Length: 223
Image 1: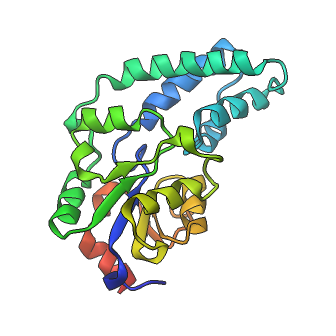
Image 2 (image 1 turned 45 degrees about the vertical axis):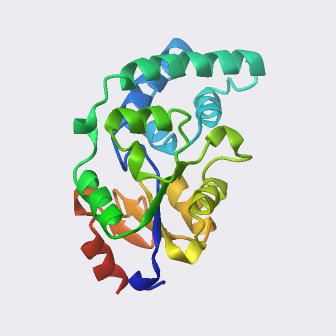
């Protein structure tokens, strides 16, 4: 594992790391699933974490073997319907919705000269960062529409690192999903998992909540 002194930048997932926008995804996807007659369950909800929009829709349809009953055009319309609902929900976000500890963590990174970028599967990431008052902390946000593959493919975190012009070994990526941790690891960055360490067992570093994430705590783990 790399030493703390080698780290120069951080790549962030957004949902479940910077803010709990995942709850809005859950509401919007569940409403669509129920409209389609697909039974919602906790396992499906967990597997959708970190997955892009069309990937999530196909996963929901596959629950009841419906993925071949809709044309690509119909799927795109369903995904757009979900996104319209989701955008209505996230329009209520304010800086008070930043997850515990994250504002202080971003402030400390900025004060210590670390570079930051966002690697979120959400096409709404710039809108959400603006609502949270966090946009100015980040050098850039990866556009998921420009990617060839979503998480767990490493491409999104590779691109997030390229935005910072830093080598993978100089970066720590923060994620709350197993798919995201696989993506960070595949990109050659040090992975920091936030959440259940059993679910995120492939992470290099584990913190059970965002409130535990500080530069000092990361340094203590890396040495």
